[in-house]
Image 1 (cartoon, rainbow, N blue to C red):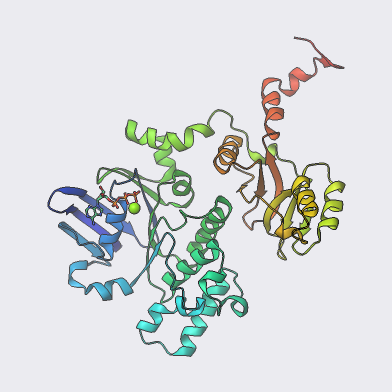
Image 2: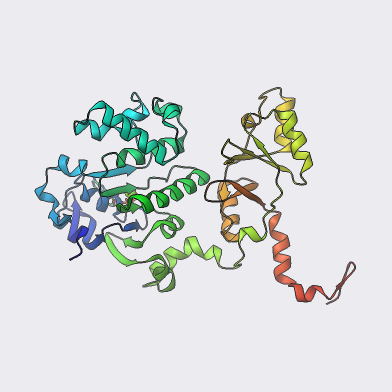
Length: 390
Ligand SMILES: Nc1ncnc2c1ncn2[C@@H]1O[C@H](COP(=O)(O)OP(=O)(O)OP(=O)(O)O)[C@@H](O)[C@H]1O
Ligand SMILES: [Mg+2]
């Protein structure tokens, strides 16, 4: 028989004798499954998650982990047996990256060599060179790197369950995308049973094997992403999907069909004069800055470089003001517009799953495609010279 790794049976949580946070929840998570809990603020997602590791004690019902009633574990034993990742993970500031990763191994009494090796192995898994990062302190890392260490810390003793509560919620869109990709990649390799909380439908659709939509402490619908998109149970579900998704429906055109793909690129460390020269060889107004692995760090413009030069400020391209929002080539143009509006930036990097540049998308990318939609190719044979015959 297939063991359900996590099983909620008629679980409830009532705070202070009156506030019902979770109401008669029944849900099973199978081995290797990534289940996303989603729903409006206050619907009980965090409470549900925290009842699994007994940070919150249920008021009623039973939760089983690998078949065993969690109330029969000591809470400490239970917590150490599963990874837990939260937003702004709270790495210990006075401890190095390697020591942060080794918190649970340390509690479990691993020797120093084993701890060190495990930390190195995990850093390599997310392509952070241990020689560079193992001995850094959290404040010497970017937000995305810190969050990555939070995930590694949760994986340190190789638990079979991972609990993640909006782990990428505080990151900029580019970094969030990248960490989502990494989680998918990790999940392919390590196959954990994951309970993941988010309020971002795009994130849920991207990551979930199954989405559990909650409202007022109850499960409204639990289904695969495709099933939920195709057959929403009721108006609440379609509205919830709709607020994020409806915007993508009007034009089913992908970013790669309209992006500019001849954007000049310079490497980190290039000085400003060279960068400007490089930029002027291209036709657009933008320049992409990439690192040694050709991953996009940001997009900058002639104006910004000129300003940096005139102000006598930075001397290298990476220190010039940049925007770092990004979108995938497969995304719809409406999603890209949404992303532009959200970030307030005027340009998006279009990147592949390795964060390498494939193009740029600006507001200017839009009219052309709208025109193509309105005057498809067949009709264009009617166009002669500058005259459009209707
Ligand atoms: N310790 C507590 N004492 C009293 N009420 C609580 C406590 N923790 C949570 N609640 C209440 O329980 C309900 C569910 O909270 P929970 O944190 O699970 O929501 P959530 O779905 O994670 O929301 P968000 O998306 O805002 O994180 C809310 O109404 C909240 O106010
Ligand atoms: Mg929450």
